[in-house]
Length: 291
Length: 291
Image (cartoon, rainbow over all chains, first blue to last red; front, side, top):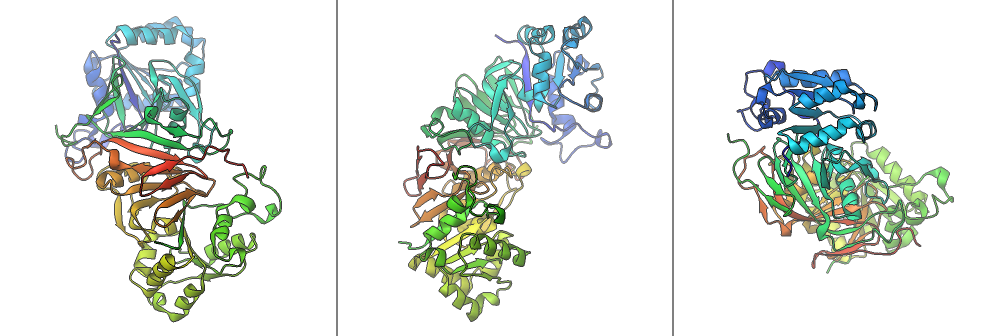
């Protein structure tokens, strides 16, 4: 049983705009940052709502001040101001009691984008990551990640493979992630950056993993390692390789083109849910922008 | 019964390089232009091989001289020199006896990239297109198209929908193509430009159409409206919507996010074949770069 909530975001999520504040974007629909944005949902899911203590973890980024400030402003627009930027730059800092104390007090940790290998190499095997896991399992805690922060959340993490070579054997690389969730492989900026090929290669190599392709401004919330609900305006593609009936994957050499027969793909949009244990999608048939 | 051969290319096909001539690219494998390129295969499939009369149809392009010259050089590197550039710019020219005579004498028509709407609006309903159809059905004739030239080959043709909006209802547009093949929807530059979303939207709107997503430097050859063989180094994704069990497509409004349950996807690489009538993929298990 996991008490925490995992929110994974495909990157480039809406962060609002000072000029829009109080106004309604469109007709107050699914795209309205103040009513329906991913960060708003994150606050709603947190234990103390707007009063929750939020730490922005900028370790993945090479421009931590800038990205940290963006999130402080974005949450500020939603009246959440109990917020800090946790810029752990080294493994040494990931052992620092000062940072551990701040993590202990946090209701939400928001892991920013950047390079996911920075997250694993700096946080992997440290007291900081251990405490993240403990809080995620035992507390009413929100662990959220966007882009690299989302990609790194699972046990297996993709870190290489541009779209143009992603279906040539060996051109996509997977390594170990931060391990908050198992049996999935999370990719981000999915449609925009043409990443279907890399999920297909990962899934054909091991259909145990469900490929989760989060588009920009898309998010899923996962509770108890089982229930996955779409909470962002964008779409998510699920790539399920259990149905594969044939492939040349084991016949061809590195660099050769891959063939795959019969992968099942789903597209999730807001309010849809997916049961990770039963492998079953439930599509919500109401209009997307109802309230 | 169709006697002609249809070769559709995902764009950006290898056109060789004068400096490489005679040399072997890599180890003479699947990527070697002179031995295994798409244009080489096109010559092999044509009735008179290197001596075939080839017409480069540049109507889709706004830089017809440039693109025409590129193909003349590319075929020239393969010792095919009986070649002309057919630059039909207007509907009037598509009635011109001079051009019809040239088409009559052609063994291969290679339709270049550009804007597929130029092809349909300039050639649609003209004696030129009628003659293309007649030759394709009755003769040992190769009709090849790359990028826009491929996308326009089918009865239904996609012409709009950038990757970032491609899974919002109504953001992908289909219109009538040149009609050489039915029951498919051909998209190009498929992985590189992140176009999976638009095929998914097209297929959910009508699962009668098999979505064909040709990546760059990928090609399929279709014979007798039935047999489809991968002949290029690149990969092709097939999107088969007949298996769809649920969608919100009819519930949501234009601009809303689409959900889809259970689309079947295949990945084809060189030497694989697909039967368009039986809807069956056959993966070739030999090494890709064998000779």
